Length: 205
Image (tube, rainbow, N blue to C red):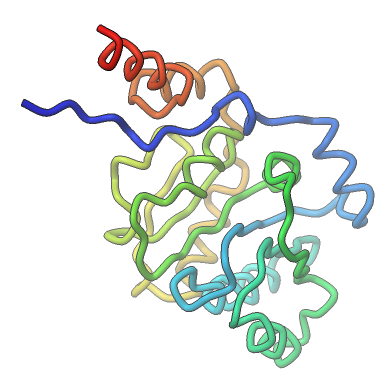
């Protein structure tokens, strides 16, 4: 007999915060921009190379858009070189490692998650807690990660142009309200407060 305890997260800590959203967007001059974001190590696994390719296509028809990459890693210089080659230096922002991920997720309008391989994908869970519309790699990100209706799977093999068109179709999808988010995370076993309570009952009887 086995009982599964999910790799749950602190739902309350990652919820959308409008004040933090406005603060970051005003600081960087993004108040009138559509902001695509990615959080993770700048590494082959996370596939920010493809994220930049997708953004290059998206930016052609959405010039008031920016791509924000949160994190550091061995691919950073290569990614910056790629951005320079396509002349998007003013529209792609490398903001390094950040401790206030909730604030950055709140500042985004869409979470771009094109990983080549993943375990569970904690970043995708955190983005959904924030209510963010998310597009992620099909057959790479586990389907059980999907909590919200505004979470979309798309095949990496479709290519950057197809991903850009898909983002165009979903960019106006609204953020999910926190009350709905909380209910879904509790129901699916990914709210840490709820799961901690279950574990205490198991251990303490």
